[in-house]
Image (cartoon, rainbow, N blue to C red; front, side, top):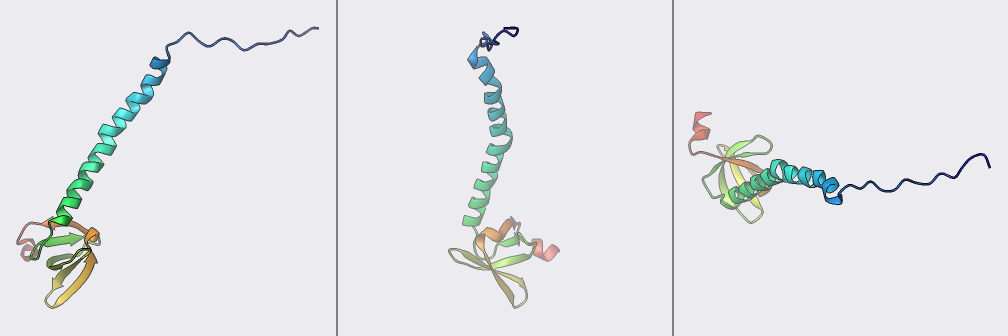
Length: 105
């Protein structure tokens, strides 16, 4: 035979924990930079939607500004002009505005 058999080399003598450490570091970085802030923002959004009441001034996700006239379990009725009301889902309310904001627009 002219060609000798080739065998795989043995595994490097490195520490398995040290090779796994960069993955752990990346996950920790993702948690603190991406996941945690998103969870905090979602929690604040849920609290704002739960606290909606008649008379609050809000902005919907579509950009409509108005005053809340009626709140039910899943829907909110918003007055956008004199004698003009629309009904949207609570999740469509993007933010609550300070009182008197509509008059200043």
